[in-house]
Image (tube, rainbow, N blue to C red; front, side, top):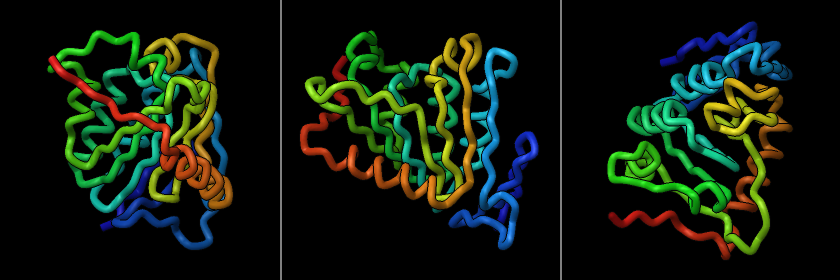
Amino acid sequence: MRNAFFIMGLTITLGTPPVLAANSEATRSVTIYHSPEMNLEEVDRQLLDQVGNGSTINFAAFILSDYRIMDSLRGAADRGARIRIYLDPKEILTQQFTEKHPFVKLWRTRGVDMKIKAVDDGFMHLKAYSISNVILRTGSANDSVSGLERQDNDILVITDKVAIESFNRKFESMWSCTSNTSFEFHE
């Protein structure tokens, strides 16, 4: 089954597994969105809410505190996507988590794996994710309410295969680092 996905002039065909339509202009497309003129959370949620069975998401976030983005990631996993989330430790260490916190719920979701960069290894400052080698979302916007809605930020949605593969190689390198830690929650 294929789902047509349309967002502000960018058309991408997602299937199981997602594929770009042959000879599509989307194969080399870059679309830029800016906040606060536009709510960038809506762009992220539209992308993530299209992801389902057989898809993969490689998600690198300096900050992941927007509850609705976490809900969209959980929804993608519930629909059968495999999600890997790589985080900077700074934001995690400042949070007061509870059993019902959306981050804890995301961490416990089947199909979601999380790794945290070691504190001593410097910042992991990326704000990017790839969806099944079809889409790369990157830019300056952190996955926080202020970063997506109120600050001067941007999101670039890229469908160039070379750019997506480059990000995925970087993600694999970070993901496989032996000094990474795991998120732990104990109430």
